[in-house]
Length: 227
Image (tube, rainbow, N blue to C red):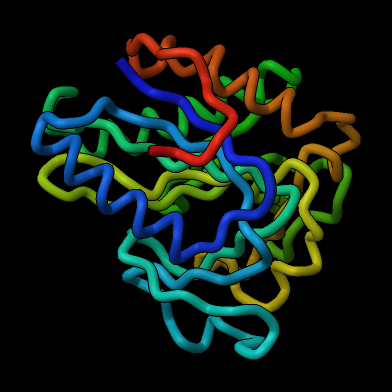
């Protein structure tokens, strides 16, 4: 069983990390259920294990946190749905690459609930939207904007950290970093694409599509701080 929790308000990043590390350890010991935690953070930047200092272009803009997740710099803030994913990857085949692909598939299935086509790209973790409405790149290839970022870490084969989907964040906040080290493409959100989608709508879609990707049963969601 997977326990779902949604927190109202903005959750401080250090508080979220402390809870994830504790819960992941408990899952690994067999003392707690797997968990999905849906939340929003105040504006901040996080540096993954592959982050390059030059990609933090405005270091004084928001708090910057070193993160144990994979990947480079990313932004979190209001209007962005963060889903922290604590699952037993060992029980799901000991296949980290497949797990990351499943995370991307989950986002793509969620976006499809709003008739939006999300896509994967080799060498670029995350989910992308092709933008034929914007000028092509200098090499003639279409512009693509990132709508969801992924970054996970495993401890004793239990995942933590997870994904973020841009629902209606302030997209100018991304200009303080080179998101995920990629400068040739931009970022977008559901509302930026003209979709009148709320955070509640995204949460419903995430829960609806989860079992199709991960094959897990879920307990009813609690709108409270996670245990």
